[in-house]
Every structure is written in structure tokens, then in C-alpha cells.
Length: 166
Image 1: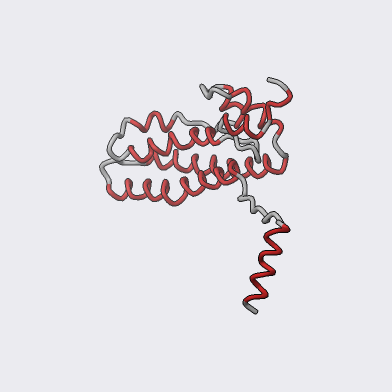
Image 2: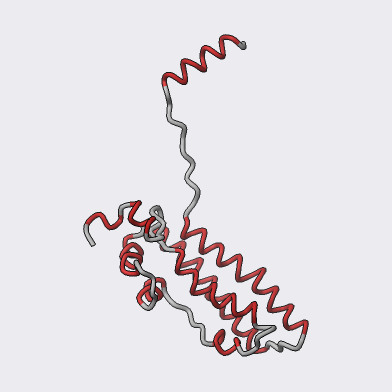
């Protein structure tokens, strides 16, 4: 990996946000468990797999993943703006805490009980998914509003139109 490894086009091609230096692939750590939680009422044997979930730091996730650009994802993480990383860490901490709550719900879950299924489904929809979206928002960064480029010819044309229609 040369000095140009963090070029925006190189990062984007690797599915790493060129503005934040973070990769959405990390969200799979949570999305996979959410999928299992949604299946749990119909497939109670998923509970063991859900219970095996543990929090995992961003760089640890990529070290153990099959993500083809995992080395770049880790290097970009370490090169990311510290304030972006702090926002990311805070959002992930909230999500990790919610995942711990979900694991507690799974321990008490009775797939044959409609209320238990409803409680679990509500938690996934109203707590976990919004928190995952929040982490995704940090990864994808704020929208960048571009200022229009001043074009002298366009300004002259607009002035001519303005003269016609006072």
C-alpha cells in the first residue's frame, strides 16, 4: 500500500467512506444479529447464536473478517479524524448497550408467547435498528452541501434576463 492508499477513489472503491475513513461493513456485526432476532419467534434455535454475540471493536472486527480490503479499513480507521472516531465510538457504545438489553430479552424470550414475541420485535424495530442507523450515519458522514460555482457568463446572462423582467 503506497502513499496514495487514502485517495478518495481508492477508499470509495473499497467501500470505505472517503470523508470519514470508515466502512459500513462494520454494521454487519450488528445486522446479522438483528436478522437472527427477527427470526427468533419462528426459529427458536437461533437463540444460541444470538447469545454468542459479543461487542467487537472496529479494528478487531476487520482483523477477523473476510472483508477484501480489511487492511485498508484498519489503516483508514487509524487515520480517521479523532472527532469522527469519538462520535463513532459513542454511537457504538450506545448500540452495544442496547445489544446487551436484547440479549437479556432473548434469555427471557418464549417463542410460544405472543407478548414475548411482540416485546422482542418492538425492541428490534424501535431501539436496535435506529441505533444501527445512527452508527451508519456517523460512518457515512454528514451530507456535504456544495456551493454553486460562480460562472461569469451565467451571471451576465442572468443580469440580461433581470433587465427584461424588472
